[in-house]
Each structure stands twice: as C-alpha cells, then as structure tokens.
Image 1 (tube, rainbow, N blue to C red):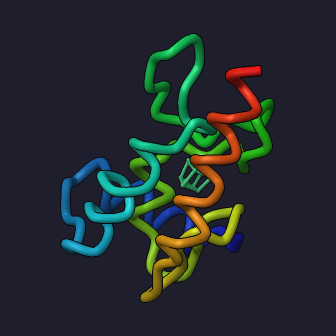
Image 2: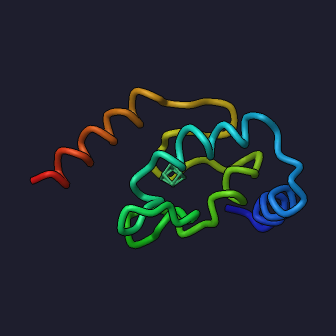
Amino acid sequence: MNIISIIEGNLRYALNIRTSIMVFREENYCKKCPIAFKDGRYTGFCNKSEGGCGCLIGAKTSQNTEGCPKGFFANNWFKPELFNEFLKEYESTNRR
Ligand code: SF4
C-alpha cells in the first residue's frame, strides 16, 4: 500500500467524495465481513487480529488502487463467490 493511496482514501472518506464502487465495497463486503466485527458489533476496521490489514474500512474502500487483503475485491472487480464461501466457512467454524 503506498502513501499516496492511503492519503487518497482518507481524504475521500473524510470529505465524502466516494464513487459508487467505493460505497459498494463497504456496504456489500466489509459491513458483512466477520473480520470487521468484534463481539457481534461492526468495528469499522479490517481487524488485524482477525487476519485483516488493520485499515479503517471507510478509508480503505475509498482508495482507487488498493484491494481487500483477503482478495474479495480490488480496484474494479469483485469475487462474490469467494466471499460467500468465506462467510459459510466462517459461520460453520464458529458454530462448533
Ligand atoms: S477482509 Fe476485505 S471485506 Fe473483510 S473487512 Fe477487510 S477489506 Fe473488508
């Protein structure tokens, strides 16, 4: 992750100048991703302790060049099957 990209993401997020794809990433992936939750509550962070990158999700999803550390999305593509598979696996592991 380069510094320009981090600055871009934080500025876009702070100033609310996000494209629809940036909002889509957060709404349809991160806000449904167990890595962003702690004790059942959405933290707003891609939690490092859960295998994420540690970034603030609003800023992370507002970068043009950076993708999800788990490979669920990147600049202009999404992998819904991979994400759904991860959710199923996570759910079954945490039910045991
Ligand atoms: S792992 Fe990917 S989808 Fe999950 S919170 Fe982090 S950036 Fe979002």
